[in-house]
Amino acid sequence: MDKLTRREFLRLSALTAGATVLAACAPQPAPTTAPTALPAATKAAATAAPTTAAATVAPTTAPAAAYPIVKEPLTLTYWVPATPNVMATLKTFGEMTCYKELEKKTGIRLEFQHPPMGQDTEQFNLVVASGKFPDIIERDWTTAPGGPAKYIKDGIILRLNDLIKQHAPNLNKVLADRPEWKRMIATDEGDIYCFPFLRSDPYLQTFAGLTLRGDWLDKLGLKVPTTIDEWRDVLVAFKTKDPNGNGKADEIGFNPWKDNSARGSFNMYAFVGAWGIGMNWFQDKGVVKYGPLQPEFKEFLKVMAQWFKEGLIDPDYITTNLAGLDAKITGNQIGVAMINTGSGIGKYVPLMQPKDPKFKLTAAPYPVLKAGDKPQLGQRDNAYAGQGSAAITTANKRVVETVKLLDYAYGAEGHILFNFGVEGLTYKMENGYPRYTDEITKNPQKLPMNQAMGKHFRSVFNGPFLQDRRYMEQYSALPEQQEAIKTWMQPSNEKQLPPITPTQEESRKFSTIMAEVTTRYDEAFNKILQGQLPIDAWDQFAKDIKQMGIDDAIKIQQAALDRYNKRP
Image (cartoon, rainbow, N blue to C red; front, top):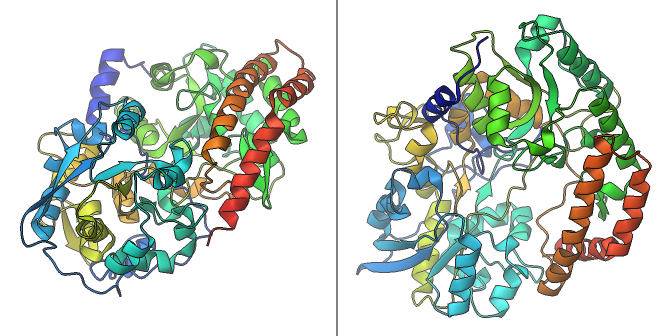
């Protein structure tokens, strides 16, 4: 097949519903916890929807709130980072359909303050230092230095436990039904600090995994690999048997680049998870472990170094970027990559199939060592990953009204509004299933689907509400995407860490240690993988990071996990 020119690639990309799946895809395998009751407006969908929409959670038995919330117009200030999904067509979140409708319902207008994109952290720090806070701040509070507990203690944001019990019946019901979520959104002292963004279904938490050229498998008569040995056989065949059919030995087996990291695929458990470990932090029955120090890690690295030596891993993986990966995939060169459902499969399939109808991307399960074993680790976010969480500041003079306003999104009507928009405009009900209209799926202004969604509601990114699985069923509508999510949901993932929160002192010390460790890690890993150092050089790396204080970093992580497990 012919390669796409860069201009053609960019033109076609703009017409696909690419964009990131970010908060969208949900990584959860088969084992899921029981869902909360469905909102009345969506209860029928639990049986009518084409897939299990039962994990669409929102309270049904919470006492009905009175609307509008205020008798006289009220304006609240709301600081929140911007997102390209919205800002591609609008100047502020206040122009989104969901917030226009929210104002009609509650009588409360939100005046949004958006920091320049890419300057979220700097601008947040300036707001905090100024002492002049907006009424609401939305951000990932788990990544703030010292964690949310520091900002409660310092008098910047409010403790919300009693306020939620008294004035937020919808969220209160959600947390009562799912106590594990309550633990995630509380500090180690049990203080709830935000109205959270929650992904209520494993389908929404899994969004990336190993993906092969399915048409190459078909051409060579190969099956989707499951074990490390089977993977090597497939990569060798991709490398040596000219699956792209151009008569040149230009095929590349696997490129590990992902998310601006040369080893990004490995960070998401590609291949390394077969040994039951991760590239970084994980837990084993409550004990925190650092992957590079585990005996299995050396075995993993030895295999990867052998693959590199055999030409099965892209020799240019360190200098790869997104444009380079795009070029090699659309240029019919790469056989395997770690990609997302939306910005990967959802981008490449529509781009390539018009030029090559046989082009096919096939998701593969996370590898294991022995046939029949179940994958232990794979990409999956926690139900609460931190982002899109709204806290109320101590500058707020209308706290009760603000609590009631934010609580609306967790009830039946708000749940639909923030996930699907307005009936008749952006969705229509079909046997209880909210089906997006042409305004979203075939936008009259020819907007990509993610931007069409961003004009009207927030399910395509994040925010203080419960994301609905049925949004993802329609956003990732290609059969290849839906099959990929199911395939990547297989790992049990009990070894992944929950959203732990180091103290400010711990965070400072941990960051100092890990900055040095990570630099040494990248250097040693890449040199050994590329054959510039022997595999036994990893033993020296392990000794080096002991001198850098890795044991103290492990103790910090362990203390944070212990506190998390003791949360009420």
